[in-house]
Image 1: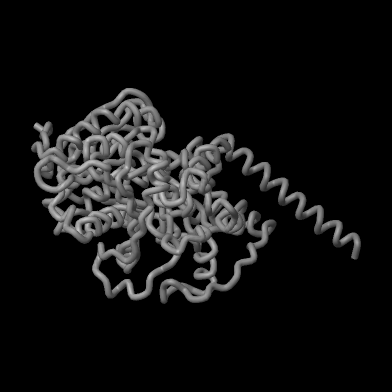
Image 2 (image 1 turned 90 degrees about the vertical axis):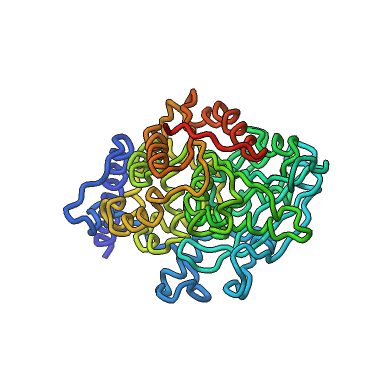
Length: 463
């Protein structure tokens, strides 16, 4: 019996050594696994599940979707961000289907804490919770913070509103700008990753100094679905609806412009592309959208990020996407389930970059070979592809000329496509790479947004 246990122990050790060695080689080369059958797990993937047991996951109280198995529902619950302890962010309102998109469900004055964060004089800051829509078209909710300056608006009409879509890029609810604005800089939120301080670039502070109101949306939605464009665009559009419906009609006739970069660029881009279909009532309200550092082809970027210095971002995005598209969870192996239910699920944006240093390919986390080429992946790529849409507002598109993460060609193609569709558009190639492009592109982007909010017609450089 002891000999049998010794043989079993040696066998497990040998398998673990083989797995470790193979993963080590893959981390160095950054290559996909080879698989004879696209849907079948490779030998290495089978060995990972043999060596690593599934994590203990408590049963879900109720599946969020009728077609989810109890096992999948339990995993889906387990990978959600932990509650913040603030019911406005945590509580799922009852009867959402009975309210219209944009209807205000709850609001709170957060002037005292927001004033410490913004870096400019603040007259009032209101945290809004309102009805929105999930990626699958089901009733959902969004949160956003409306900040107004202390001075009266002296320009024509009602006070304009600039939507500042920050690059949240996070998995945890405490990482959102809204949570930090409501609870202060020391609240444990994503101060660096989401640029909640708004110190760089000073979008909100600059807009407030010009007398504009600023709407700062938590555009990842209640499930923190980073990079899900449908969620982001709908949360922003419903946030604009909520602001326009505030008592007193202070913003009922206000011009609105939207700007964002990188993760925020996904949100601003989606706002423009979904405007006419999702919120036709806002077509004449949103006067311009600026988007920078934008991912336009998710399939291409997933392949580029896989197994290299950007692999951490890809792994975070996959987990975030699974919160709105639970079918992804059915393809996580035991190793990935341990990671997805660990404190990583509450990580803020500064974690994703360092995770990519080791170059972990996504295949290490999957139970099928070539997961980026799977039927599920193709379905998600199709659902999140907005390239066949026409922008409902004039566009300002900018991109760093030497962006190693996201090649500039995608932004150029977006410009060509929207020009061909008749959208007044401007394109700018900015000095630097992805991170510095945020700074070098800010002056031009803000100047363009400022002109739209002042009522100047959008320039068209397509010709």
